[in-house]
Image (cartoon, rainbow, N blue to C red; front, side, top):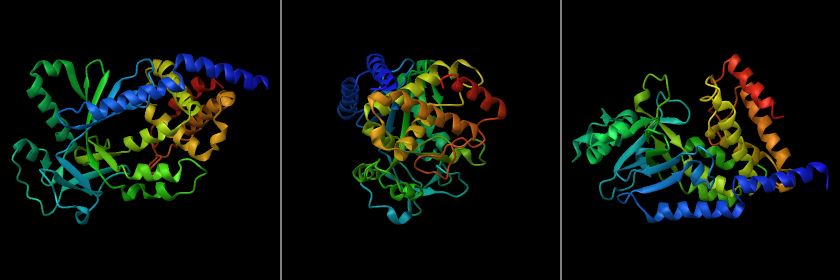
Length: 346
């Protein structure tokens, strides 16, 4: 065994002690799955997302919950709308004047704008469903339940309602049961081995979610919704072997401990970008490369990919690659600073 392989093995054992072993990650994931299935919030479906839902417990990690709103169902077209059961309100995707990964949602053409709850009606701007008013609607519901003290404890943070220390994020979201056309190329594009056909089938059967956050700077930003692949991403993370998961955790630690201490840089890179990089590398690589005795070289490959993406302002969305997550995100100075800090590890 080479010195590099031996060092990697020692490093792997160290990381298993500090970040958690494969068995501990499995137990943590299972506990959150049981919690999601067994403790419904007023009969709502909830999904523990974020780093904790993925089975990791890192310093400063918050608790992310996605709550699927049962009052609404999203469809790609009017023709897809099935006969409604109960009080489910049908919303249809409208991509007019929207950016990639975002959409507007409108009420089904044949559906009347009459609701028992006037507060629901007030979320609509004409027949468009407002993401901004939807967030305020749920903030108002929480206020009515918990009283004025709620405003001093919680705030709207992006698509979420977050507690003031920002340790817990609650995102109410809408579900489309079908895999959408915008992401259809992901299903069929050429790849090596990962993800497997069975994994792809499992993912597309879960559909997609829509979260109430808009594309900043758009002329109609208050009525745009972002497409969320959180369920698909969680399934993909669960398919990682332990080396891939540890490399992902190391990237998060790098960002948290190094870059986020710099005021100018801390908001430029987030967990979602790191996860996206891991997905692309995993799809492009041979699964046999992710071994305990190669963990150092695997992590360095991930870090170099991150540096490359920042330098060329290019990180394509994993499911909708027409959308560049890094478009106009970094100016020359920010690139230089990111490069300097990242290069210290190479």
